[in-house]
Image (cartoon, rainbow, N blue to C red; front, side, top):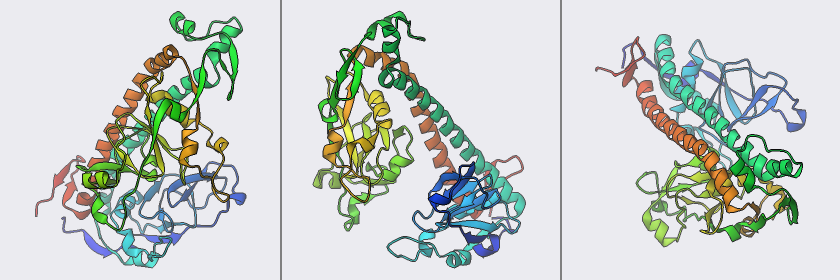
Length: 414
């Protein structure tokens, strides 16, 4: 570590302040991001704090840190940096990621963070020039991860647009019905679509197509959670079997390969937790409904997640089912609760799905397969970049590694 680093209380580096109340009924349409304990959750017309800023959770979700580059509104479930005391905001966002927030939690039924306890935590503070160098190295990795996320969002929107056209709006069928040539399709693909409609339980669908339930086109499985009191069933070791939660699904993207927890083989066998094969569509249906992903490798899940093993005779594949479930209106299933939206496994099995003939399903698969393959590769790259960032972060902020003038990371010589 360089000799001019100093160990100081966090409160001498930044001053944290509680966010502001802003009930939903008081929000006005605008472009100012509203930041909750889990990140940007809405937008407003008024500025609460001038950017750039750093925000972390005070109640609810704690431990996540967000760098907000523009003006923003921090909610009262957050702590935001009121004063950087001349330090680099980007650097302080990484510094906060090294803090043990659980040590400052009041341990109540709703996890919370004590701001004064945070201010007393000792941290290592490098000079401003080195702060900026560290932030530049780590920020470059985060910028590439964000660029990858936007690329994948574009690729997914392309796949969803084609799905919407063919299987929701039925554009090729309507064009043929009107005596028009469906735009953008070759003659062989056009010939696959009928030129008339028929009635179904979901309204008008193309002639010859079917409506089936989820359990008619697949085997619907539900995950399981072993007893938490016996911690030896769970691990953080990637050699064990990945076990996904709703939170994991929320940050996964189109494909899910990474989970925050794993189950031992002994736990899988003892509690008969269903193994989810590679390339299987999974869906959250409790608490947070409608999160959808495709497994990248064998996995497990908790009981709030259903998975769909498609039958051999089902004409479509995982990409079709992913697109269908991503755009499905889950409110049409009703609710098993009077105080929250909730469905059960029987409702999941009863989801009605429009089933096209095999030829059309295969044509869709050929069209979107390159998009999904590219998305998978991009997600793998982002996971590697995130691993590198997470490895460098504690080493750079402890002084174990330093950044030279050429922004190259080198080991510190004692």
